[in-house]
Length: 255
Length: 255
Image (cartoon, rainbow over all chains, first blue to last red; front, side):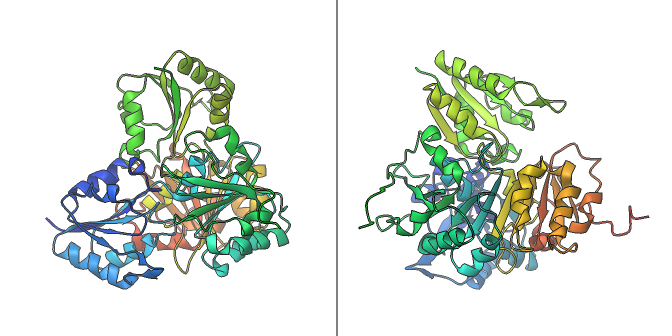
């Protein structure tokens, strides 16, 4: 039996949102390499596998990408069925492409198993449809980890022409909001930050684009998905399972 | 037992890419309303349910959105567990928001179950990561069904600033390509059309933005997902399970 690697999307965090294929691969796996935010309940599915955490620790990568690649190649060569489990979808800000290329260059068979992306599932679970007839016929998805990642796209973006979803952007939420407002987006554009969408204690901050920088996020350890656009205002008419629990505080924090 | 409705994403077409929650809801369902492209193998999971096709027939809606909404409300009121099964994700060009609003307005409990979106899964299964370090840190997703759906967004889009994914855009692929080229996108930008990505006979056309309008799609009944951007050129180094079978024909069709 020759080894192989599956690059598997874990979805937004709820084990019920794993795909059937992800579950089948985890059950058969000999080795699972997983990132931050993969919950223990998901790892338990891989009952016969050794499991290694290869995500960040205290903000730093616990292992370089090269070291992860080498580990997968070595395990597959000795016959292991490896599952590389990544939050959301492996090809949406997940470095799945880099890992697939390294594996293929080493002649290791690779299977790509898309997952439910948090970029769309987090808003959905908070009652926000990223597209909606009459409100948005386009979606823009950017990484907010650095200005050079989102500025080229946001620079030319016509105000209101798309729902904007920002992943990994909590730290730069003020800069993203300012950038859009300077380019003509109304400060009154509805905005939300969805925290831990797929968890029972998921919470959503609701406000306006002009308030995004002042949104208090100190209470949350979960990463937040930022959503900007008129579709955000639909949440009260759609959301049910996960209710927005943090209402916009129009007066607080302005004094 | 009071009735309820689950708006469920079916993913890109492979029953193995259904979520566990989707499967559990289908198994318990009394009534399933499904759209075009939902394969029979998926419907069989709903073994005890009545199943109604409510998608398009010969290009026309077989039922208006209002009629679908009324049908769901009526069934839930008489106690049915209804699954509204939609290709991909219900909130990504799926009218899920409209249906959720209609149901909530009628006081019907609604559960939203995100699915694997074809917008990202179709490229992934063809070996194209929509983001990739050094190639794309942003993705733009538009509907190509009408010029007014994609033009506002594409108008300001800085050339090369994002991977562009167009759903429902086969008919207007030439117009989309011309629009981008007129706005400074190089005609040499790699482009692909992924057909039936999650099916065993999935096929991918590979070419350049300037050739997109001339890509022959007559042989395909499956809908195509258009992907534009430098990430498309990574497919030969990533794709393995679904190989591109239609290579770019540089010389054909030019005479």
